[in-house]
Length: 104
Image (cartoon, rainbow, N blue to C red; front, side, top):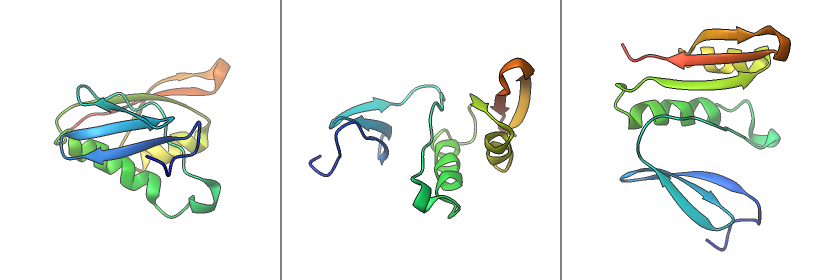
């Protein structure tokens, strides 16, 4: 884990599921589908990395578990809509969207 910068957070795909790595410690998350943060360094944005990560999360749950998330701004809403999420609720006062992806 020496390659991680202090304070950095990464998502790793493991054979048994996904894990978050923060400050050199690994925290597996194998149950439920709670997508909290996606951050792509600005110099790598626009290349489809975020979309691929979202698709891997959906694939990990075998496309059978609904995924819910909250995001701010219409730009982020549009990002998740490209991955077939729908707006379940919009909070106008905060420009915040509660979104949901439901497997077919």
